[in-house]
Image (cartoon, rainbow, N blue to C red; front, side, top):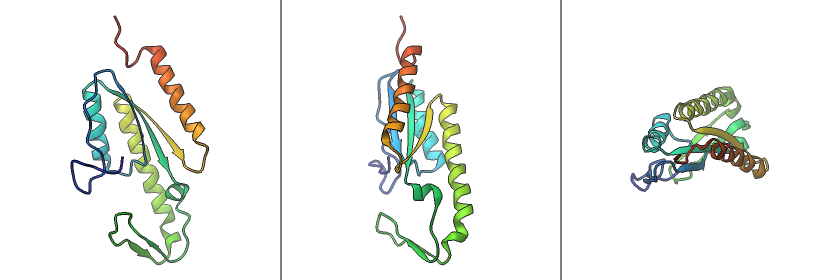
Length: 148
């Protein structure tokens, strides 16, 4: 979910039309603005689509374990940032990271979507099983299916 074919340099893929009562499973780091995230979920939800969101992050993205002088380069080739004392930013970074994650979870819940997190240093089976349980629970409750 990090590229946008509809907008050069964008953060999210275009929302594809799906049949009503479909279920979306999206896995991403969701390092996009809360406004873009909400717009994406709202567009799906408006068409009757439900969803489960899995935020997958690297431990370094969550913990910010960096010390000393560090250069952070961007993946897109644009010059990054040189930080003299990375550890001085740790608390601010962690607070902002958690606030962003909390906001995404609130947005997802507001639209009736689930939001869970997973770190890439943990077994993927834990995330897959959690998603499977949510999908199974939805199926048992009849969520996402038409009732006669």
